[in-house]
Length: 68
Image 1 (cartoon, rainbow, N blue to C red):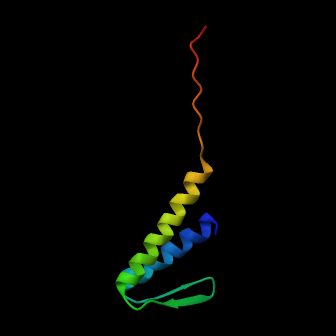
Image 2 (cartoon, rainbow, N blue to C red):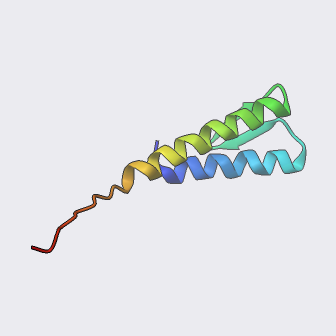
Image 3 (cartoon, one colour):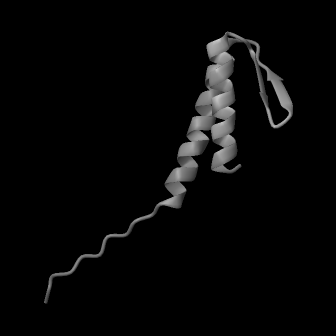
C-alpha cells in the first residue's frame, strides 16, 4: 500500500472519530467499526505501516577514514 493511500485512510478515521461515528468511507468503500477502541487500533496499525514505509525509503551508510 502506498503512503498516500495510508494517509487518506488515517485522515478518514480521524474525521470519523472527531464526528463521533463508527463508519469510515474511503475509495468508494465503507467500513463500520464496532467501537471507538477498534477504530483507534486500526489507526495505530495504519500509522505503523506508514512508519515502516518511511523507514525503508531512507537508508544511510557511514564511511570512516583515518585520513592517511
